[in-house]
Length: 270
Image 1: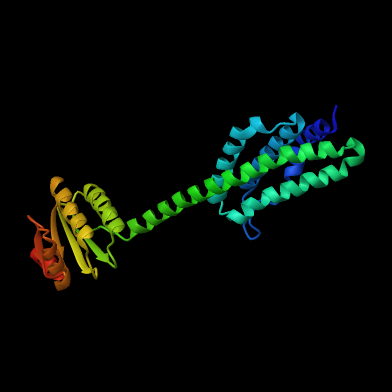
Image 2: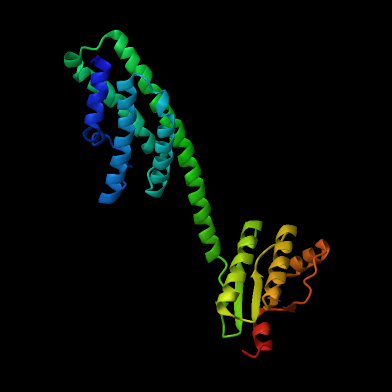
């Protein structure tokens, strides 16, 4: 058996022990026993791919497995709060670990200069591919994670509160951009269906400005609510917003407008 075959076989046999020598988490991160085991299994899988590449003296058939590993590891790292730099450090640690192992086993396996070159030639494609794919997977999963987190925050910024069995209020505070306006439409519809109210008071007294796109979204919210039998009462419309809406040419037809929230509630005899 050639020296590189012996080394590859040894790495495959000892992959779990070798994986335990790697530090794949953030220094200040506390992982559960279950998460630690999953991380260890992923590290062990990557070591097995490297062992196979060395043993077979060929890394070309491992591309799909390495890509799959990188995607799973990227997703796992984001879910467990592991930094990108800390995740990538596994690869540099692994490269160093293999070289230390070769030094340790030199007397036993008697590597030639040619075999050392071949081993390096088969290690690098696996590690480099794993690094590139891991970065891509991590960035994509992190983007999706942040998008979901932002969406959750946005939903909390659109609170629909039931005043009684028939009337609910939706007080809006702060900037109303296009993204928040879209979430407003979705949340308002779902909450009104859930509460079974027939009237929704939409209070804009805390909204400083409304642009063309947002005004259109508001108009669509009102039209959508009308389709499910909910009347919209608009309150707190600032003069500058009212003027902007008129200039834009949007007409909030079939909707009651009141000066403020107090007037709207009094008019409903709540």
